[in-house]
Image (cartoon, rainbow, N blue to C red; front, side, top):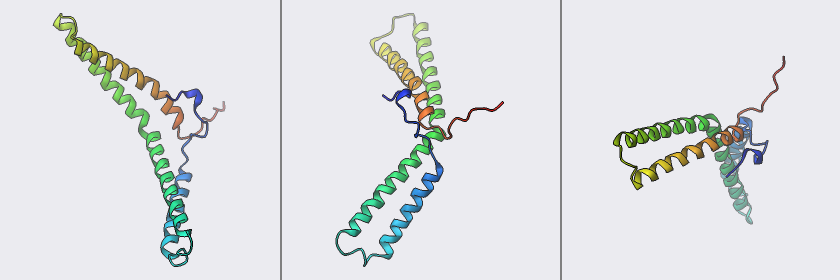
Length: 140
C-alpha cells in the first residue's frame, strides 16, 4: 500500500499536460491519415501507431488522475460515512436482539470495520497524491 512518505512530489495533476497529450494524439492520428503512402516503407507506420497508442494511454491516465483529483476524496468520505452508518445499524440491531452476534454478523462487523480503516488510510494518500495545485505558503 502506498504511504504518504513514499509519494512523489511530481504527482500534481497539470491540465496543460493533458491538453498537450490530446494535441499530440490528434497530430499523430492526422499524420497516420495524411501520410499513409509515405509511412508504408519499412516499419515507420507501425512505430507511429505504437507512439500514438502510448500517447493515448498517457492522455487517458491524466484524465483519470484529474477525475480522482476532483472527486476521489469526496467519494471516499461519502463511502466511509455510508459504511459507518451500516456498522452503527448492524451494532444497534445486534444490541437490541440481546443475543450474542452470530458468526456471520461478527464477520460482517469485522469487514465493515476493516473497510472503514482502509478508507481512513486511503483518504490522506489520495489527497496528497492527486492534489490539484502545489501548496503555497500564506503571506501575512
